[in-house]
Length: 203
Image (cartoon, rainbow, N blue to C red; front, side):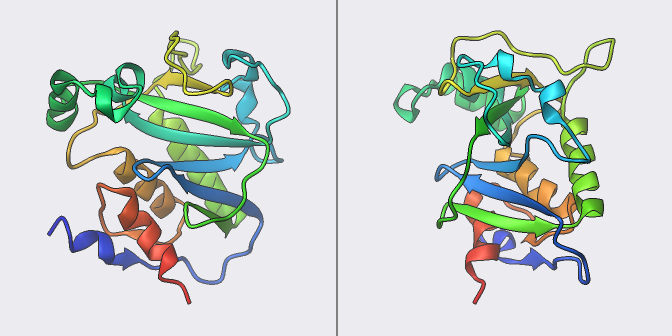
């Protein structure tokens, strides 16, 4: 079942306009949802601030969101350094989660990066889905995770809701984001392959 379900997909909503460009981006394991940093509907930089990155560079015009297990993100720089305790907690839902955000100046489509055009209404739903994934403080602001475990000079980590487990992974989160936006997605998938199979199957 875990092998079959990722190969069955939902259908893209018909008859919608192409107003906003988003991307799905994978590193071979983990899928990010990439959106404009700012447009007429949303300015993400008001909460996911440039100043929270090492570079503090304000020239990025795309922002990647990747939900996942906090232990993996902060304590596992490479797969070779993966500890059993981190993997066990992630698999069993005993760990907490985090949002990894990365600013980009541009992205080029490739087998690992797919551009998807969506309508304003669909983007509004995607915005709501991403926003609802964050934990917020008493004033309604997202909560930065102070860490030196950054992957590059343009990323940061934030507190989020839910717990990672074998049935709800980083890729399940990204797959559900596509569903929220009315786009093609796997019925269910724990891996990036289930997401990208829906788009690489295009003729």
